[in-house]
Length: 343
Image 1 (cartoon, helix red, strand yellow):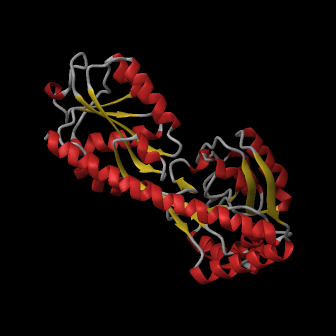
Image 2 (tube, helix red, strand yellow):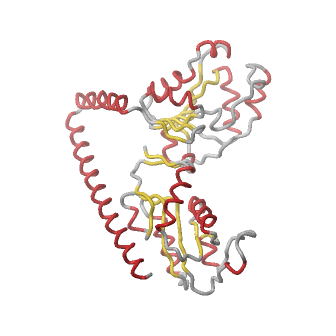
Image 3 (cartoon, one colour):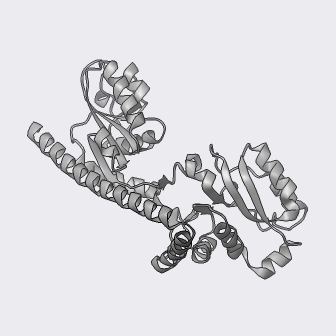
């Protein structure tokens, strides 16, 4: 699972800037994630920013006092424009944007770009920063990504804030917290498994809160212990979540606590996205190899023909990815040479 955080995106954009044309007049973001990239580029380069609709309508976002009004381009005349997105996978959205702008017959010289591209995605843009293989997920889109339906997600610290010491009294204050706490994040995909150290006796209140805030999920796994005192004495928060994660076919666990995230990785041998750190924590090479080895042996025993067929397909796909990466580097070099000729 390849992962990029908002901090990674910011750092990568700064590294990317010297490789972009140095005489741009306008940055155009493809909604929504592309606007994050466009705004960062606009701030670093002190250039005006708009979206695709704004470019077609000749409208630019208000820039504030740092950008002199004389530097705001009149879009009725031709300018050098960079249309950006955060990432490209299949290229469907970028192709649609290209088609729309070409049909609009705008007077501008338009470049197309994305920070991250798949091995196939580079062919749809003029500039890109990095080829990131699939599967991949980004900090800013994980709650809208299809992987959420195949993930375990903690509640406190992820979907809502953690209770304060006063609220976490295993009594009336805690019940009030469970009823009234506000969501931290709005997701658009159904969650596969909610895995929480909340106690089973609070299931009804938890389900009511989830329903109230339209948080859809398949399963809700809670600790079956009598009270908070017992839970604290056992100190099994991380191991409880790891056992749940290990026993189901989830591909990712989203956890708030750094300490628990590390324990889950160690015990389950699968990756955990830690929201406190903003990082993807992956199992060690030995743990991952051990788990894969056991799974491979089991599959060979069960159906050897299917395993070797999968292996053949995997090798074919890997060779294709290598081929596409080489082609991408060659194309990138040619584009750079062409730009240098124009300059």
